[in-house]
Image (tube, rainbow, N blue to C red; front, side, top):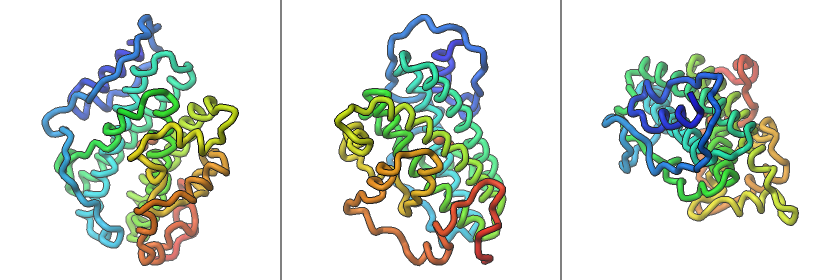
Length: 292
Ligand SMILES: [Fe+2]
Ligand SMILES: [Fe+2]
């Protein structure tokens, strides 16, 4: 199979099973390098995009198993969109360096693992994928993906960057409630997402013009109303960006960015769960947290 055929399969085949087909190496040589920009993915009726707003449960309510299921459903949707959009990028940027394209394939494989982890765990919580409306927040950014660099700025530096904060926050909160299984899942995903942000930074960094710093370059690649707010969780954990090898000035500039949504972090829950006091790493879960 060619990489482009595989990417088309992930984008157009309708079921979850199809989207979870792992990459099969070695690949046949590509012969056609015409960029293809698909407008939307193929999705079975249960997986259609929805504009209905669904509130994600508050951290304080994750003592309830049903709320854990709803949260994981939300995260699983991000993984599905990531699989599709990295496949989208393989088709849209056929002439990207081989290392970048191989990185996309590796990322797809890991996003598939994340999706499977969430699907399995949320079923244990009584929630099936598609039971709730599926937003299409990543797909809405299509108009920004004019170049490989802008794709990396939006998908990796921003969304996957913010996911480093969220994976930490949820790992800590699930652990607080004694749900170490789900906490471990969050940390497995956290470790992979560090690599994804790294890959994105590589695609983004090599194109920085001489007269611009990384922050200016990043700003030039994203389009309003998308703002750097998307590059962080409601609690920003800069240490996680250091792990991803992000430039220290860029880390700081993202941290300094403010708009009307700034300051919404619930300090009570930050205190209650000890959020951000320590960065948890895989298999080092219990060493730093206060017991519930
Ligand atoms: Fe992921
Ligand atoms: Fe990712």
